[in-house]
Length: 342
Ligand SMILES: Nc1nc2c(ncn2[C@@H]2O[C@H](COP(=O)(O)OP(=O)(O)OP(=O)(O)O)[C@@H](O)[C@H]2O)c(=O)[nH]1
Ligand SMILES: [Mg+2]
Image 1 (tube, rainbow, N blue to C red):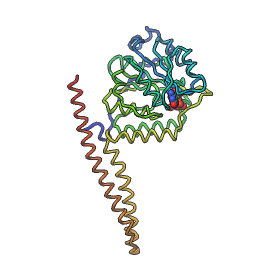
Image 2 (cartoon, helix red, strand yellow; image 1 turned 120 degrees about the vertical axis):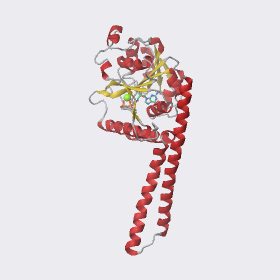
Image 3 (cartoon, helix red, strand yellow; image 1 turned 180 degrees about the vertical axis):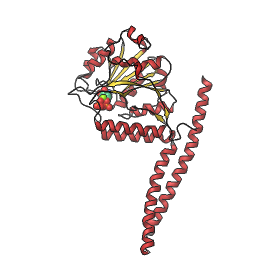
Image 4 (cartoon, rainbow, N blue to C red; image 1 turned 60 degrees about the horizontal axis):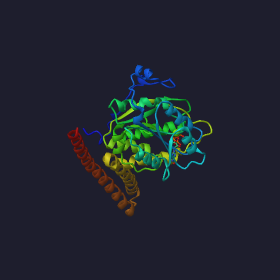
């Protein structure tokens, strides 16, 4: 049975918590090997940090990665007004100003410039631990993944995610799983690692906070191997402000997940629209019929509308089925091409 065209889940690789660095602030080479993590060349890694007014945390984040031996740190700043760019530069990072606006645009610009073997994407708000970066890089180095997501729910610190955001995240992950048939625990994580080839496969267009969903959906579409590793998630430092509006950005994220499913799961995409038309037509039909049966009242225009709604709903379903067949064939061809390439 086809993986995506159904509502069944397939699992992303989940790396167990047993290989976590847990409480260790900075790990020595010996500590890494003792917990089974590979020691890769830090020169091969580029750390990308999008920032907008993160003056309260950016220095610590940049220094955290430098202290671990990562020499390539690129901060893409959204024209902060609190001196973030200067603070990052003084801490030792290369800083560029993004040419447009929004986190998504900054990430795209950063991806275009990063030419290292491995690319790490991390928020500059100090909510992620630099010393856990090896947990993300390890599956790449071992060749078992092309895109590793740091799962914030692996080790959530009290208050790091507000109850409303936690609920929203859970719903979005569930919705994503239903749409794309891939079970992920943290679609919206801001701590990720990629191989260079993985990043080059991604065709990104979102400019705002939808970027994380788009990156993950593109990874699924392009057949990248996604792994999740449990990481620590800390609350934002006091005095620093979130740029995320849970309602406005949350609905944009849901819409992005839905819209991008058009080619990946057309049955769900068109089926959902078809169900809405069908249900509206059915309800209007019941009303028309009840009135006619009880008092011989005719609603001619409403009857025509009912018929139109039901026909449109039905046609959307047929479109979904046809789209699903085309998507399955397309995936089959892609799989075959990939198999031949290997
Ligand atoms: N360059 C750039 N960075 C941005 C922009 N908006 C947000 N960021 C950065 O993107 C990262 C994530 O933004 P946050 O506001 O922390 O959003 P979040 O992590 O989803 O939400 P929190 O729960 O508040 O942490 C941070 O490092 C921000 O500074 C932007 O327009 N341009
Ligand atoms: Mg954040």
